Length: 327
Image (cartoon, rainbow, N blue to C red; front, side, top):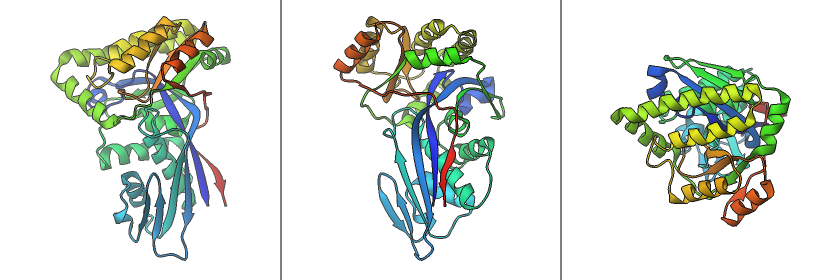
């Protein structure tokens, strides 16, 4: 039995510039971080059985991998050349479709388990690149490359993407005092709204292609991501919070599906109760709201919870996908 643990991520700056329609022309730049909420994949050979057993939100019993409905499991098994009966089970700390990159964490964790199953070592770069190949090239998902690299590498990362799609991933150069400030002052709240990220991202792509102003907004988002990097490397976390607010104002212009009146109401409530800035994590439209709040945190928490939001306490996770059991 093999068990992998792969972290989820929060997008911090430059989100959207990891999409092919943007980086292929203008290059991408992002700041992202993983947290101590995880996807777990359990892999077990079914030596004495003729069928594979696949457990996710559904249960599948299949004689051929071609029959598997879960696209990422099916294509990962094909990609890795695993055709014998096998059992795959997944578990998660948070619901899917909530903006924390769970689908890519799932895929990276599964690839990690499959490499281990075949007695192969796979580096973080290999896992990320293979996950991107399956997501973007094989499944043709309208998504970017942030989530796969965050899940594979872990930590607080800077991602640079050239026009050919090559990603350079590196740890952001910030001291432990700044990390502590972020952990003490960043908050995640679950809206209870699940959304299909692909719908938001497809709409974003269409908008950028049809309206030059939206493409200009993405340029601004990349610039803001670079300013966020500067603020964090200087240890100016308050400025980071201010840039988050500016980032969100630009991000809302990407797609009409990015926000809605309820999200806007919660966001304004947060600012009224002490938050300096914030954003919807991930593609937008629901999932988790992230805020930076330095003072009156008790009042801030109370206001958000009374408004119907649920807090998700978290810490940063500095390891990427790892095998936690193999026997």
